[in-house]
Length: 381
Ligand code: PLP
Image (cartoon, rainbow, N blue to C red; front, side, top):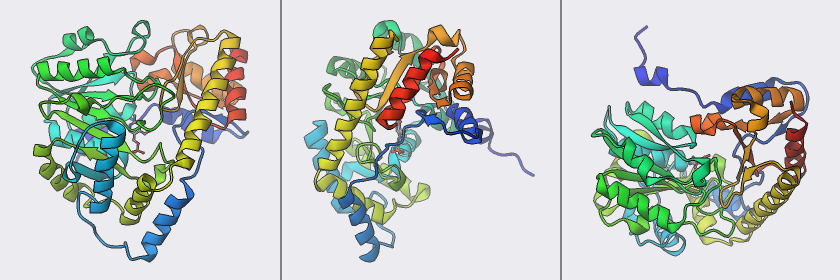
């Protein structure tokens, strides 16, 4: 048999898989707090719009960059909620945020170049960069700096091969929301080194008081590509709809690349996404309120137990310090915790070396299980 493409064969599996495989293999019921999957269904009018679209004949190819009415609605949303002005031509509808990011990387990376990615950060950044024969280089988000990027750390990582930086706010796994000054400083850093800035804003609709700030607001040079998703805000993970917003000179190429990648996004799912944006927002608001209540209850319980944590200001994750339990190997502790206490969490090292000693717990877990799972940390060995 001929050899596989080297980077396909060597791409590392996401570290969360070990926990998932063990969780599935255990006989008893477990408390699953390890995945970022909303515990809700999509709003009713969204499901209805998808159903109607099938009946109305949305069973054919549609334009590569998406349905014109959806691109127009997204452009309005970006102005209203993200604070920057774009034309519908700058919007490319994608198969979830995952494909929006893949499109952004495909547009900008060359084999052998380096991409700065957050550590801790979503593992798929490194996987996608590696697939394109580029090298992911982690920039540390340190506890002592409030898990915010430090420009001096970034400066030290730049080489002649550095081509792009990935910024993710609100952050998975940290739940941090970068303040405007940090976002602006990151864009200026990209300006200084003439880098692409790929801004993953997949959790832009999930913040708890903190203002989400889009990097594109500070873009004067046309270097920011912004990736968004319907998955989390509207609990539409299985619908696979997201979008990439690009500077005007990039829009024709961005739309063109969809042809060999996916041709177009599933048309009924695009109609459902249109309903999500233009229809009532009360169900989405209710989900957000539930995550917030869970966050407050979880944080109060952790405080009472004297367990250190990072207070999430966005996304639906809680980043918890278990250094006293993990003894330098949080991956092994996570597996032991699951076997002994029946609770699945994501060990911090799944998100990079900088996650050693920490775990990520999903607030998408129902409240009763969430609080019980957290209580078991204190009972663990
Ligand atoms: N970006 C981050 C940080 C994520 O956590 C996720 C999903 O978990 C995504 C992007 C992509 O989500 P989707 O492809 O479902 O839109």
